[in-house]
Length: 80
Image (cartoon, rainbow, N blue to C red; front, side, top):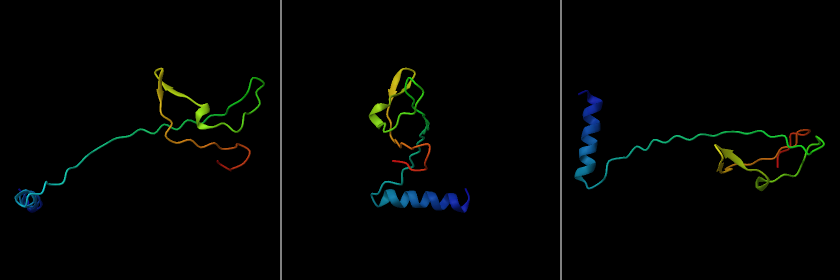
């Protein structure tokens, strides 16, 4: 065992001997899917002023939460 390994073991033993739990490493993964939408009416005109509640995202017919919603006007760079 190298020097680094002996130090790590010594620190873990010291933590347990003082009644402390050694550090726990938690690994996690997330997946962010960005969906860009241009909403139009039956005549092809763009629909503005849409809110989060106006949208539903489905994955295999199962509703998925919208964790972030930003509405942007295409003819400006202003997002609301």
